[in-house]
Image 1 (cartoon, rainbow, N blue to C red):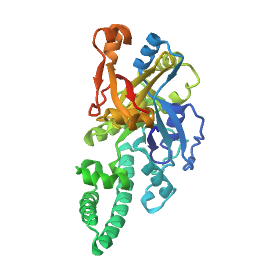
Image 2: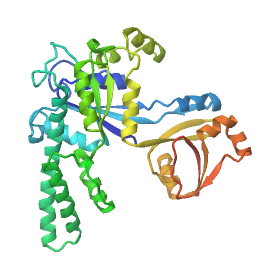
Image 3: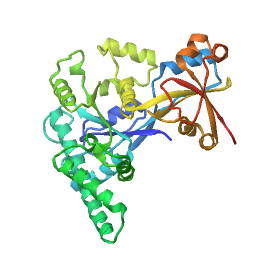
Image 4: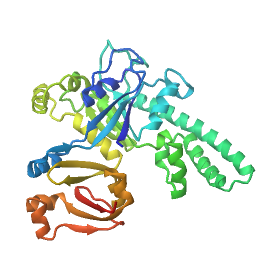
Length: 366
């Protein structure tokens, strides 16, 4: 199972161009609204220099990098929460994603129409947010109504749901995203079923054109940067059209080409890293003899048995202990054998929470 990030934004913001650059999958990206109707999906390896360092040391037969699924979702228009454009399909696809990458148009191109008739990144971000808030409010109202009927027939659990929905409704009516609220463990169980849109972690991708290269003060980017800072949302600058045109080159040639263009920091890796960051995922590694090296993604706070279940369901059910070695110790001692001799390999039990960079061998009973 991979974690998914839905790429969203207004029509003609450049979502499909960003998706093509991320996944090297050629999808239609013509300059007209709703070019993307059915969502495109692509699994993208998470950049991890440690994995390649381990590969050089271990020399396994196979290396399997962790991936995040990116989903290119149909463009949104004002009124999507009421079914305008492809609104209902757009919003249902977002509901299935674990996080949101919102592409905001910051490029100028007279051949690519803007649905609002002008470029205004802050306004566009507010439009998307408003539609998500309204859809959440609609769903909360429906849930509140159903919970009320259940309470009338004496269902005790309905009371907690009514209190939660009332809290959410009050926030949504004040145009406050649900991510801003705090929830009890009991409420979180209900929320996992509801999957509200504004509860999902989100970051912005500023889709920039060539005219913005080497211009830190580019007005549209500055406007979005200030808006993102005001709302505590991570922002990644990305030269979508330029970076999508170089994906057929190998990585070294890509970096050289982009530097020659004046792009010192390519956005591709930063977009993928931002997806990992907002999902609050940690990386751990498994080495099976000299045959297979893999890295895995788990949420921060994951206990060892649950992490074992990412590798194989049998590992979680039959978990006994975990042999744990940090990446830094592995490198320091030149491999697992020397690390064991120096007492760097630890035995951890069921309560142990996986740490970033752990190299783990799970012991389990079949």
